[in-house]
Image 1 (tube, rainbow, N blue to C red):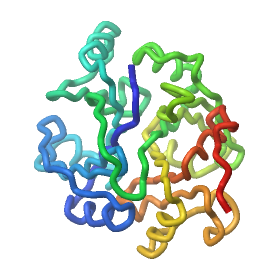
Image 2: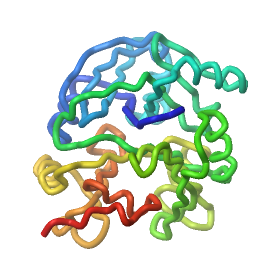
Image 3: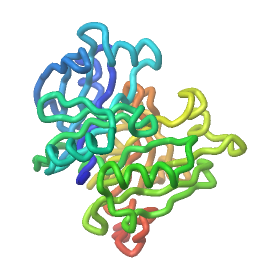
Amino acid sequence: MLERVDRMLLAVRHRARATETFVRLLGAAPARETHSAHLSATVSVLSLGESEIELCEPSGPGLVRDHLDRWGEGPLFAGYSTSRLDALADRLRARGAAFLREGERLYVPGTTTFGFPMAISPSAQRPRVGPVSFLYEATNTLDTDWRTVAARYADLFDLDASKFSPIGSERFGYEGTLTLFDPPARLDRIELSQTFADRPSAMRRFVERRGGDSLYMCYVETHDFDALKARLLAAGATLTPRSGRIEDEREGAWVHPKDLHGLLLGISRTTLAWEWSGRPELVTPLAS
């Protein structure tokens, strides 16, 4: 039932400052202001490519303030979309899965989804804004066996497990799967990354700090990697290249969370992510 990764919700201390950051570094554009009683937060919604970023500033005691007090700024919910919101709510309810509905959104707490809080909204088509094309992934870092999590998500969200693609990294010390929703048409998925105590890595340290399963980061695709990289470097952002030196990198990079109010952001050029998503033949060669 899940169709797209369509947003990320971040807990921030000052919406105006965070808005300026995302506009300056990523070419996001302010879209609207709203308020969530469930989050006890005032929210600045920004367009980021075809997706959205929600910057949530606490308006009183509640989820956002608690997150800031405990963890500081950073990812609060991974946002997904469906064209069958009511049917999904019924499915979750039938399985005894806890969630809260606020208007046309389902908030699924991390207690339901292995430390991976989700905000599920109705599917919508939006014009592309800025150098980012769209979000396509949020990462669920795990201490739990990834197979258990994959089976649970397939059942909760009516996902076709035959479309999932295994993933693993010696560099980052994890194993897991990509719960691809609609391959080869789209890259959208949840990344399940199981970490291990005997494979020290930044990802494992994050899991240990959070006390287990958790929401870690997200990924965007860009239709102009060179321009976006130059924009980020000009703004003083710290970038980690996929390989070699950042000066020579033309395919992908990671933006340090200190530059994006606690958000670790992966960036890949158009189609590159198919290289590790089970369909390397779909990667368009890099133009010289």
